[in-house]
Image (cartoon, chains in turn blue, cyan):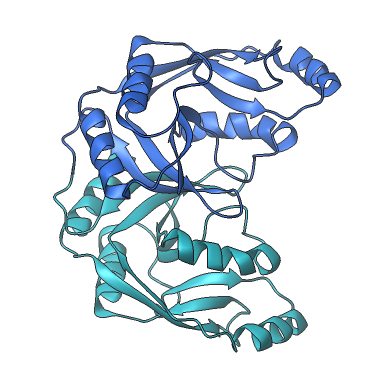
Length: 171
Length: 171
C-alpha cells in the first residue's frame, strides 16, 4: 500500500486553497487541501504497526499554531505554487519524528511546510499565475491539533485511514 | 458546518466501488467510496461536543463483519445503484445511536446500509446499467473497526475531521 501523512487544516483554509486549486492543481479532486508531513511511501508493513508508531509520536507532540503569511513557489526546482507555512520547531520536529520511525525514503528536499495551490503548470502558466498570486495578502493562523494517515486508491485518490490527535494519550 | 458520518471500507472494496463510480456516480470526485451511517446534517454545535458524543458511542460498539452479497437499486424511490450490505444488528444499532445522540433530522427512509456505485442516472441509463450490474457476483466480507466524521467544503467535497475506533477507550 502507498501511504502518506498529512495535516488537513481548517475548512476556512481549505476553502481558500481550493479556490485556486480548482484552476491550477490537477490533484484537486484526488485529496482535500493538505500540508504534507511525510511524502508518499510504499510499504508492506502491517497498518497496525504504522498506526502504533504514529500514536506514540502524536502523544509526544503538543498542538501548535500554523501560520501562513504568503504565497510562494518552488521554482526553479519545480513549478509548484503554495501557501507557505512558517517553519516552526514543532512542525519540523513532527516531520523529523515521522521520518525517523516509519518506512520510506529520506526526504528528497529540505522540509518546507506548505499547502499546494497550483502544480504541473507550464513555465508560462507558472509565471502568469504566480505573478498574480504572489501579490495576495495572505494572513492566516490556526491551531493544529491532529494529523492523518492516508492511503492511495487505484484511481490515484486518497482515503483517510486514521486521525491522530496531538498531545493526547493514544486510543 | 455540514457534517456526515461514514465508514470507509477496505482499499479492495473502495477500488471495486470506484471502478463503477467513475462512470456512473457524479459524486466520484467528492468523497471516497463509503457506507453512510448518518446522512449529512447542518449544525452549529461545537465540533468537540460532536466528537465527544461519537467517542462515547464508538466505545460501546465492537468491531463487526461487513458483508456485501449483491448489487441493488433503490428504484422506484430513486435510481441509486449500490453494493447492498447485510443489515446486521451491529450496523443498525450504530446507526440508531448516532441518530439518537447527534443533531440533525430523523432518517428520511428506513436504514438500508449500502455503498453507492451509481446515482443521478436517467431512467434509461439506470435500466441499462442496473441490468448489467445486478448480474455481477459480488461476494465480499471484511471487519469494520472504525468510522469517520466528515465535513463538507464549499466546493461540495468532503474532508475527514476524525476517526473513531470501535470498542476502544476514547482518546
